[in-house]
Length: 219
Image 1 (tube, one colour):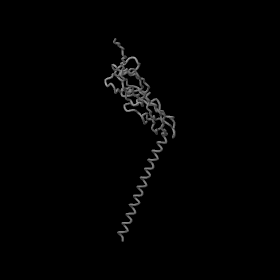
Image 2 (image 1 turned 30 degrees about the vertical axis):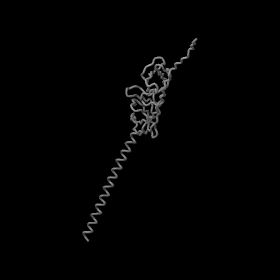
Image 3 (image 1 turned 180 degrees about the vertical axis):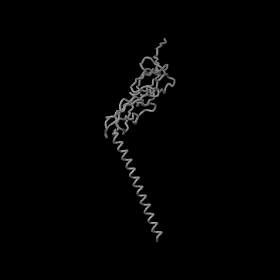
Image 4 (image 1 turned 90 degrees about the horizontal axis):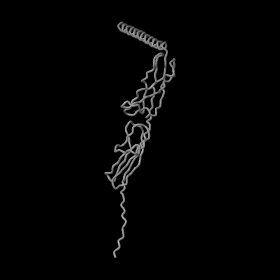
């Protein structure tokens, strides 16, 4: 008699070899996403999703500050499908706006364009910033405070929330009109006196030279 004994057949799915990396960075005005690479098999299909349900081959990209979860799926026939997720984390950029020092005459307005900016991302621009004087009266130690900045990108979109904004005040001097006139008058009077003194000195030198020449001729 011939006896047959069934054998056990085990078919194992292959394992996909891959690597996925989060993105962590500071706002720079550029789009960023997660990075997924597959080393084996090279023709495995990678798809992405923001809700874990609807997947697409397009990699989701993010520019503005925030933390975003991106789901990804790697699949290939006869391979174990990979379903995982990574994050894109974009931190705000630090921005410093410093008001410039100004000296004005009482009754004049300060220059609203007199400020410096440090930390502004390439492509972004400030479309509004408010400079406020601490006083409108005569002062030698006033300040100019900065507030209410608005920043937009190339497309004109408001991107102010992508920044942590710090402000630094400038120095303000407000002079009285009469004191300014007195200074101008004093400077003018001083120049006249200098001119007269120079004239007298020149005349003195000329007379001295004439007398000297006269004595030489007598000799």
